[in-house]
Image (tube, rainbow, N blue to C red):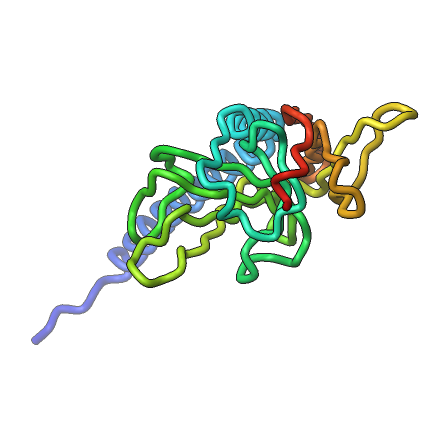
Length: 215
């Protein structure tokens, strides 16, 4: 014969369960409150600083060892370390982008075949924000084309401006001027926005035009 629970035991079990559930609810509420405070306290400025530092370094240290492998080029800067060209079709809207080279291992550039000594990168602004479309300078496998990859730099970039030097002073355009290959931006301006927070960063580009690059 099985022994049934008494009323006192049932009430006691329900009381203990209620205390445990109340404690769990309180803990979850505290965790959500902490997460909300961290979310609200997260500032956009350090993120923008990091993107700016990366792009400044990329522009200053860019190396296009094989500029002839940059297809659909409009022009390049004199040192041939920076260029204006159209990204590969698989990741391109057909618009000209700032193009630069990267050598050595970097955590942003990882493909299924691992790291590659030399990469060609395009700075792309699209629905994902600010991204890098990139590929290896040399194909990973024999008798095949180099793989094309995409790495998002910042989903919070809502606009990119290209700053040119003109007779009337500095002028900013929303897109790269494709009508004149002798006209290249001296700076790019990034407009960041997250919630109600906004900030801007300017990245300098070095050098002047080398029209021979496009010939």
